[in-house]
Amino acid sequence: MCSDVDSRVEASIARAAEALFATQRPEGSWPNHRPTAVLGTAGAIVALRLADSARSRDLIERGTAWLVSAQNADGGWGGVPGAASQLVPTVVTASALRLVAPQPTEEPTRRALELLESLGGVEALADPGMVHMATTFLVLAGLRDMRGSRRIPLELLLLPRRIWRPRLSFRLAPMVAMAFIQARHSPPKGAGRLLHRLARPTALRLLREVERGENDRGGYGGDNWLAAVVCIGLCLAEAPQGMISDTVDYLRSNVAPDGSWHIMQGLDLIGGSYVARGLADAGYTEDPRLVRARQWLRGCQQDRAFPIYGAPPGGWGWEGPRGWPNFLDSANVLAALTPAGDAEPGAQLRRGLDWLMSRQDGRGSWGTFVPDTTLSNDGPCPATTAQCVEALLDGGLPRTDPRIVKALDWLPTGQRPDGTYEGLWYRGLTSATATALVAFARGGAGDAPAARRAREALLNAQLADGSWGPGETGTPGDDPSRGTVEETAWALRGLLAAGLPAEDERLRRAAEWIMSAQRDDGLWEASPVCLHIRRLAYYVDGLIGNGLALRALGAYRSALTARPVAEREAS
Image 1 (cartoon, rainbow, N blue to C red):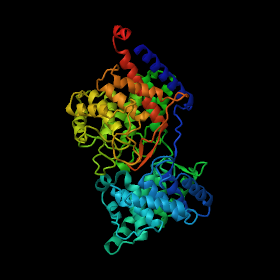
Image 2 (image 1 turned 180 degrees about the vertical axis):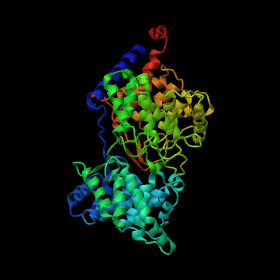
Image 3 (image 1 turned 30 degrees about the vertical axis):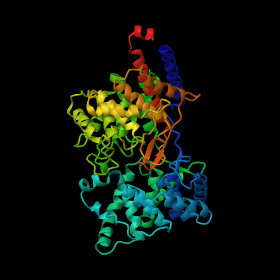
Image 4 (image 1 turned 135 degrees about the vertical axis):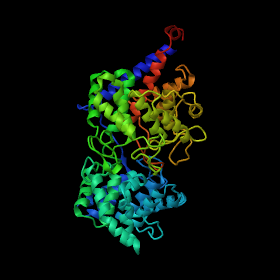
C-alpha cells in the first residue's frame, strides 16, 4: 500500500512542478491571476464619479454593470464574485450604486439594504474602524447622516511619529482620507476646526510620502480599494489637483477588460515566494529554473528605508522592490531563499535576516508593519511570529538564540482556550494553528503544553473526507464543513512537523485528499483564504495554494522515505 502511495505522491509532485515551471516568466517570477474584487470596483466607481466623471463615464457605467451582475441571490456581495455575502462589501457596494446610478440600480440597492438591516446594520461590525468606513460610504450615498460619528482627530499627526506610528500603522492613509471626508460632511467646530486646519498640510505631506514609497504613482499599497478611498478623501478636501489626478490615473490604468478592478495590482511576490519554497521542499532546489526564481526574489529586496513605518532597507513587500515592507512577506521570501544554503549570496540573505530580527517587538512577537503596535489589525500575530521563527531557524539562528526563545515564550500567550490560533492575514484557525505547531517543533518545544493543545485541536478539526477547512470561526462566509487545499496543506505539514508518522491514517487521508483535488493540468484550485480586511473580505491567490500543496506533499514524501527500507518493503 505504502509503495503505491509513494509513487502517487512522486507523480503528483512532478506534475505540479512541471505545470508551474511551464508558466514561469523569463526573469523567474510567476504570473498571479488575481480575481477582480467587489470592494476595489465599488470604491473605484465612486472615486471616478467624484474626481473624473466626464472622462471616466464609460468606466463608471461598466463598473456599475459588473457590480450588479456580481450580486448574490440574498442581495449581498462577498469579497469576490461568487463568495458568500459579507457586511462590508455589501454596504460599500450598495452605497456606490446609490451614488453613481440611483435609478438604474434601485432594485439591487434595495435588496442589499434589506440584507444589511437583517444582519444588524453597520453596528454589527466588531472593528470600530470598519464601522466608520461603512458609515462613511452610507453618508456619501445620502443614506445616513455623519452627525453623531466620533470625530477623527487629524491633529494626531502633529505629534512626533513615535507617538502616532504604533497607533495608526498601515491605516495612516485611510485615516487621513476618512478625516477629510468627515470634515466635509460634518465640519468640526470650535477648537476641533482649528486643529483640523492646522493638521491638514501635515496630512497631505504624509500622504505624499506614502505615495513616493510606492511602485506606481497614485497607488497606495498597490490596492485599488485604498487608492479609491484616498482619491475620495482628496476630492472632498479639495486637495492639490496633482494628487487627485495621480490617483485617478492609477485607477484608470488598472481597470480590467470586464469593467472591474482587481483586489490588488502586485501580489506576484507573495505567491512566488510560496511557490519557490514549495518547489524547494519538493526536491527542485538546484533546478536552474528555481535558481532563477530566487534571483528574482533577491532583486525585489528593498534598498530604501520606509520612514512611515520606521523601517530600514532590507525587507520585502508584496509589490516588488518598493511598496509597504512587512514582516510576513519578508519571512516568506527568506523561507524561499534559505534552502539554497551556501549557493545563496550571503550578504543579501544576512541583510534580510537582520531586517527581520530588527522588527521583532518587545513582547517577542511579530506583527505585520510596525513593531510594538497598538493597532490590533497589525499585531501581534501568532502566524507571522511562527513563520518568522522558522525563517530565522532556516537562516542559521540556533534554537537557543534569545530572539527564538522569546518568540516561543510568547506563542502560548496568543493561544485560544481551545488550543487553536488565529492569524491576521489568513482566514480561520487552521493556518495559524498549523504554523504555530511547526514553530514549536522546529524550536525544540514540540512537547510543550501549548504545542500539545494545538496538535489535538488540529487533529480534532479534520473533516470526514480527510481535509481541513477554516475551523469554527462563526464568521459569515466561512464554511466549516468544506475543506480547502490551502488549509489541508497547512495542517498536513504542521502535524508532520509535530512528529506524527507518515503512516498515521489521518495524515494519509490528508495527503490522499490533496492529491485527489489536483486538476488535470497538474495544479490546484484556489479558495478564498487570504484576508483583504480581517474577517470581513477575502480573496484567492492561486500561487499560494499551489506552493502550499507542493510543500505539504514534499514533507509527506520525506516522511515516507525516512522510514527504514525494511519497514517500507514490509508495508
